[in-house]
Amino acid sequence: MTQTLRCISPIDGSVFAERDTLSTEAAKAAVDRARTAQIGWAARPLQERIDLVLAGVAAVGAMNDQIVPELARMMGRPVRYGGEFGGFEERASHMASIAADSLADIEVGEDATFKRYIKRVPHGVVFVVAPWNYPYMTAINTVAPALIAGNTVVLKHATQTLLVGERMAQAFHCAGVPQDVFQNVFLTHDTTNDLIAGNAFDFINFTGSVGGGAAMERAAAGTFTGVGTELGGKDPGYVMEDADLDAAVDTLVDGAMFNAGQCCCGIERIYVHESLYKDFVAKAVEIVKGYKLGNPLDPETTLGPMANTRFADEVRAQIAEAVADGATAHIETFAEDDGGAYLTPQILTDVTHDMRVMRDESFGPVVGIMPVASDDEAIALMNDSEFGLTASLWTRDLDRAARVGDRIETGTVFMNRADYLDPGLCWTGCKNTGRGGGLSVIGYHNLTRPKSYHLKKVTS
Image (tube, rainbow, N blue to C red; front, side):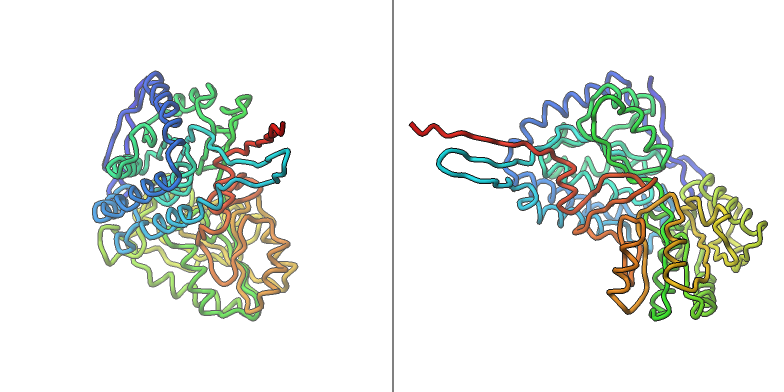
């Protein structure tokens, strides 16, 4: 059954874009075309696939002047930050640069009698379900290496960023990637469920909520389809007594507030050694008070609205509950806070892990700060979470950071930085953050399967 998807702009609540979904029959036909096209696509030389993907990436970049204000209208990020093309290109280019080595045969041995090796072969049709918060960068994490590895890709994007998949598909097709090799589709949840349950795909990559990830796994149950997930996060920062205080404050506050706090690996809780705690809080409050909340199309705006009023409502609820339970809110309500998508950024102290704001994912411009007396205390608090995506450690001692990092239940350990995705490293998580891994050589391993060759020679 066809439905109409509507992107409601957080700027003013108007309908910015709408698209009709595919019927179940049309969706199945699209996947069938992808499966047919995959054989010929995988047969092309690797360098040809790389060149076409990079041409598609460049074509997206050529659209950037249209894409940046479009993103502001769809999900509220201020135009002053220039969109996502820098990270989009960096990730795709890195994956292209390591493709030959990552996908090379593993030579096991050859003698007069046998030749043995392991190939990396594409799964087939890869289904990518991408989120709205960084819609281009999160999509390219899988789209680029999946195509380079010889898979075809079916992309379903979030309704909040309804036009992103269209833009990407248009760019890649103009660059020469065949239409059936990379398809953007608009689907209902029911059609998506039917396709997955019907074994339509060979691999699924989902970025989104814990509930959404669970729904994907339930739909795939019994099909033996691989499902990679990046789900919720509650990423901590830990500032040790020897940290560069100014750098720690600047980076961690930006990591908590950038994109209105709507970052997969945004900082959601901060633990500061008691000797630096008061100074850290004072500097953090000063920074946040200087933000300009407003229309993201205004180049003076540094903090736009949250992508949807319901997201802002959840953050307001967490803040209100924390304050009612004894937390101190340091930022007075901004004049531009309309009680809807435009939300005052907030610094909270006197918080505890009994409060939802320190336990549940906030995904908004709020951060709680707690003093700690030791590494042991900080580690216990950082691990007191159902999530594990990244952790940011601040110290001048690399060995100490490594020791502390070894004890943290997380996917990535940062030292003296935060909120960044290095495409040379595996992007992965643990606990309710999900399973699998993207980018790096491991990303290619997850988008292909091993195929072993044991060839006996005829010697007489």
